[in-house]
Length: 79
Image 1: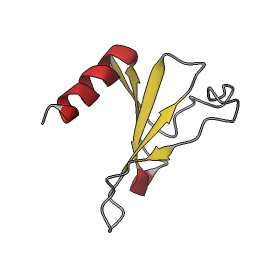
Image 2: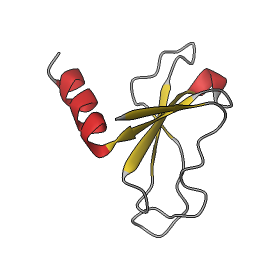
Image 3: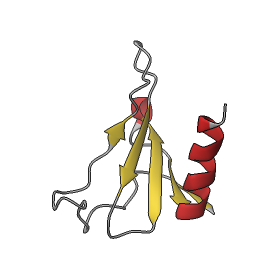
Image 4: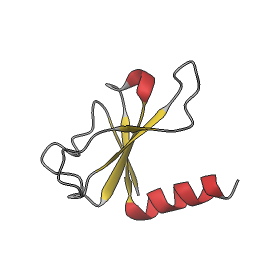
């Protein structure tokens, strides 16, 4: 299941990462030099993963269920 939300995702505002630090958006290691990147937010307290465009961080963030995230990553790896 994918949820599209306007504005910044609320995930991670009360949770923490598995190492105890606050959740933070992580940028893809495959970013283009022009800054075309995807950022991902993993929150240990949430079963969802948030994804956003780094160039427009205040716009829409997609929140994916664990199943949807696994399918998305699986298709990328399978290319």
